[in-house]
Amino acid sequence: MTTILGIHLVLLGCGAFLLVWKAMYFGGVYDTWAPGGGDVRIINYPTYDPSVIFGYLLKSPFGGDGWIISVDNMEDVIGGHIWIGTICILGGFWHIFTKPFAWARRALVWSGEAYL
Image 1 (cartoon, rainbow, N blue to C red):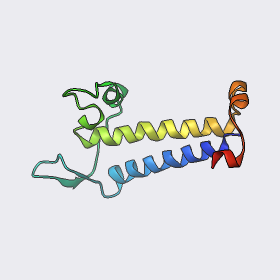
Image 2 (image 1 turned 90 degrees about the horizontal axis):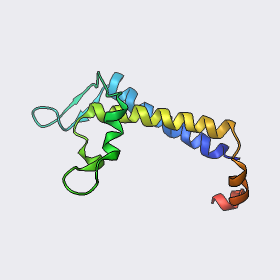
Image 3 (image 1 turned 120 degrees about the vertical axis):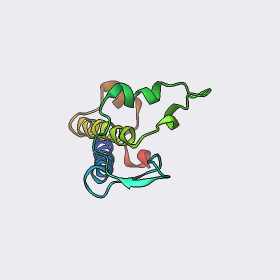
């Protein structure tokens, strides 16, 4: 019943990994923080640490913390895409291979017209 959602999540995860692949192995990405005003560079060591990646989400959006826009290096951006790609693909497989819980089947409308 949630196969459509699952397929879309897998495709979004693959898209995130396409950016990671480009940044790490195929030409690099433009880094505005590079010395000299910006340059295209290959990301060799992305950030895998979840406390760093998800720490951006836990910052206060008010005041001078900056929240998500406080990301200041490409390693964290590419590492975030690795995390998001993994979460999207795993969630997509979950939605493809399982059916909704009973409370969700009763509460939601399951028709193509309702989706549109």
